[in-house]
Image (cartoon, rainbow, N blue to C red):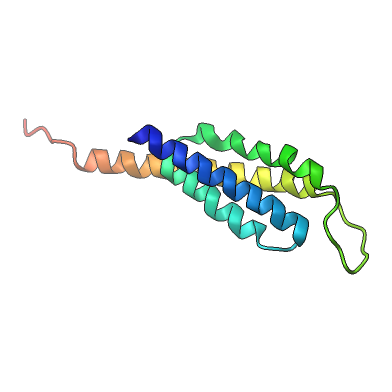
Length: 119
């Protein structure tokens, strides 16, 4: 069951990453930050494993084909992959913090429910 849960969480994370990249392309100031927050914390807390943090680096090659975002004002803009590097950094950090938070809570709960010696 745990393996299937991890696979589902990774799939949700990757779908969220693709949606965030599309959001970056459509509107640079769009909702990709909120998407990053939700999927990264979900992955970290759901798996409790900080080794999933490098998954966020996949946002960069996903974003490369998009080129430059749509900008109706005509202001100079950076390519979408630049925003994806920020996404990767923030997402990795959030995933690691959430995983360590879960591990800390589980450790505290295990100590609290551990049988005590009455010697």
